[in-house]
Length: 140
Image 1 (tube, rainbow, N blue to C red):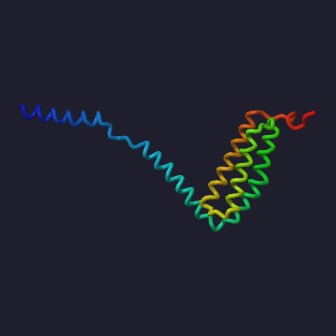
Image 2 (cartoon, rainbow, N blue to C red):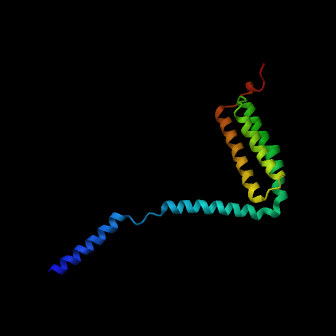
Image 3 (cartoon, one colour):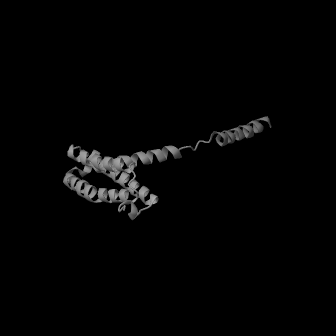
């Protein structure tokens, strides 16, 4: 009888240890690992775009410089011409252009280009939230 009680007690202790220890704690590591691999995938894709360097330069200078930056500046002016938005708009555009003029690899220039687009989109959203008005442009 004493041996049976020891076996039952030992099985209960083993079950209790797994209940208390919580061995299944890997969700944070997997999320961080997925984020890291997505960034690595993007950087590897950017590095693989080296043969399309001229296309990315044209998109950056023409698309960003002549279209997106102009829309951003118009949004700044029509929302009241707040000075805080101007340095960010100028900095985003100059970071994109300078990275291409410095002949950096596409592994660097494409992320800078997308980051500068993100800055411009955030400025446009901020100006939209602030509200647009013709009075700020055509002051009499």
